[in-house]
Length: 113
Length: 113
Picture (cartoon, rainbow over the protein chains, first blue to last red):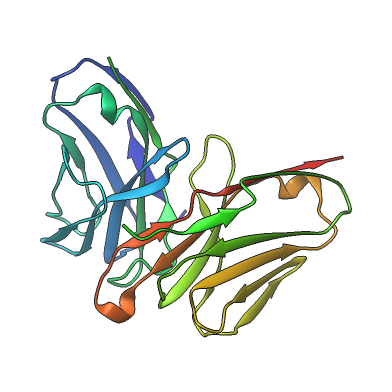
């Protein structure tokens, strides 16, 4: 089954404790991206990657890191999480190197206390 | 940050009624995508429009891209409870070489049986 998977689905952590949210897609897609979704603010893009080893900042990259060492994986790293990073996070992918017609993962709900 | 405004923010209607959701921006987009998101899940792509003035139909849903490629509308005929969800529009500025995607804040639709 073609899909985008994220792990974990739920995470509660404390301020400053480094964490990684994994994202993997099995569709051989070139483009991958991360979004956060907050009430009243909608979905905002954090980082995106047009292909392996190429990443770029989205709208709200501060406090996040990403890497794209393999085509299928695009982990999101929070080196020192803060409470304002409490949010619902989505990973997405699309077949070419653009955000055209993206497939979204199921989401990761992160709470930073 | 590009601003995509959706209206209305909330809409509650009776089964069988018609409705229109609007997505407006001051920016020109290469394409505009519509997604539907259900609670606890990631957005799912409904349609992509790429040509100014384009109209696409998906069963009871009709999507239109404005002539100037700055706005779009989604019309649902004879709404059903299964149409309930959060409807999101998203625009990309691929024509400018950018590869990020901007989402509207969404319209939350409830169809009452």
